[in-house]
Image (tube, rainbow, N blue to C red; front, side, top):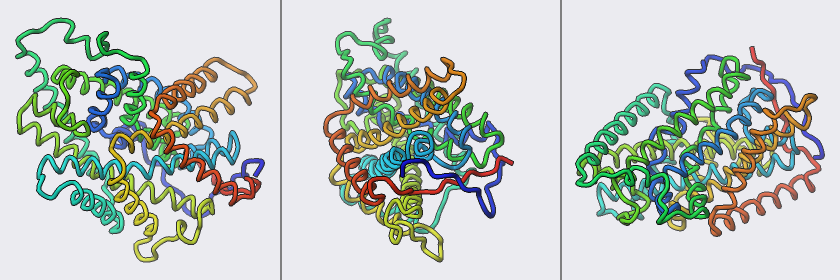
Amino acid sequence: MSSAPVPSPVNGPSLTRALSLWNLVVVGIILIQPTAPMPVYGVVSQEAHGHVVTTILISMVAMLFTAISFGRMARAYPSAGSAFTYVAREVHPAAGYAIGWSMALEYILNPLICVVWSAKAALNIWQAPGYAVWAVFFACLFTFLNLRGIRSSARINEWMAAGMGLVIFAFLVMAVRYVLRLPHLDTHLFTTPFYDPKTYSTPALFTGTSVAVLTYIGFDGISTLSEEVHNPRRNILLATVLVLLFTGVSSAVQVYAAQLIWPQSIPFPDVDTAFVHVAGRAGGVVLFQLVNLTLLVATIGSGAGSQLAAARLLYGMGRDNALPKSFFGAIEPIKRIPRNNIVLVGALALAGAFVFSYQLGAEMLNFGAFIAFMGVNAAAFVRYFLRAEKKTWSHLAPPVLGFLICLYIFCSLRTPPLLGGLAWMVLGIAYGAWKTSGFRKNLVTFEVPSED
């Protein structure tokens, strides 16, 4: 496995190129969710000592550089591939396998933290069943939806995004109303969310940033639509950057308003659902339950969708013999779904909900995501700078800065997620090395689709 496999042409039917730049931007916003900063708000506030707005903006800058690398790699490989494909083709197949394994950690942990958060949010509505019952309910719900082959249509997703937008607008209106009614207003109140000299700490800021990046997780999914968009070499890059800018600005506004309402010095009743309590302070019981229900619905959609994505990723790795094909590469013949993988991911999410806190799961998820992001930046650096006949700063700066910022934030992760993530990587790399006799055999054959 000393060199990348030679791509083979696509045989048979191919995907239809029907998406415009605007379609891509809408899909990207739906993938990330307009309410993305709300579930992580409490954890980030706790770790960054209240500097949530600053962590959101730092994360946006880091992701923008990485987004440029994703977009440029989509130019080179306009297929429904991923970071795995980019790194395997440009750096080394063994490195590509490691990136694929890190992505598996990201994809598997996403439904797990959705189960944890949904169970906590459900307790805000009805406490009697208890956390354990709610965790079992949501893990089974996600699995049931995917085993039934139910998928939300693009139209439903757009309506959900619009509904979330209305809830965000209602929250912002109530936040302005709340702040204007405060007995004392001074400039310090409005600058503290960005910088508070009493609590500021650079290590704490970047530890919080390592969690805040979860706000943007999902933007890389835009590149998987390369086979279905017009002019992918241009539109993938533009859409990814536009989606990140929109998400960053929207998220900063939401958390800024939240910090004005709830000072960092006052502890939250529950860190995991802190934003719901902020909404309650601003708009009373009605807004509390509205935001809680909105986030619960969004998390159910995200949990079910991420479980399906995890199952499909495992299926792809099994089909290509990177994992045991008889189990992971199997398709249920009637509904034509990777049933084994769906059930496995559901079982892992359920078991993990009793072991992982939301914060630990989110940080370990970001462990996998950051490795993938650094891999894409490395692939873009190799292709567009090292191998380029004409070397330019525009091809050097984004991947290098993206890699270094991601590396710094990655190193700011707390020790438990670092150790857990490293154990996962050691397990995967050891299996990959055994499977390929020291990575001397090819794991996959890449397909390059037509751009017609």
